[in-house]
Length: 123
Image (cartoon, rainbow, N blue to C red; front, side, top):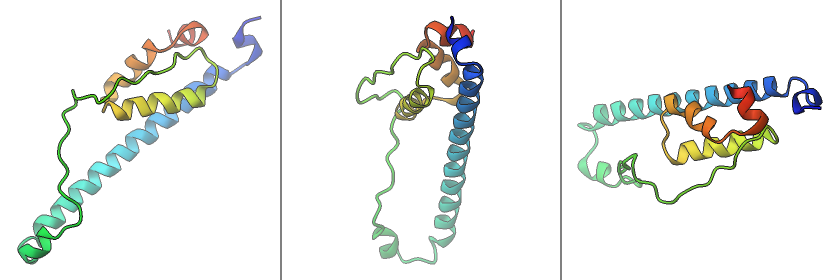
């Protein structure tokens, strides 16, 4: 008996969960970008009004850009064979966040970590 017969619809549920998480991730990224733009606009508009000492006493230093090619450590992503899909989706999303993976590359990269029944389903 195959895993598909043991768990009817499990690949559909996995695909739906993956789509939901991907959409949530994209929405959060867009929200952060939107808020960052609004904050930058407010700072520029308020800059002439605020005294230089108020601007300099900001508790947070300006963020330093991190080049996308700098990876502090190698992270191992477990292979996905169709078992424990939610845990694997969480781990692969953490991997993507850590490496600042572009949205258009995530599905291709995720497929490299699939095997067995999950890979057959993906194809």
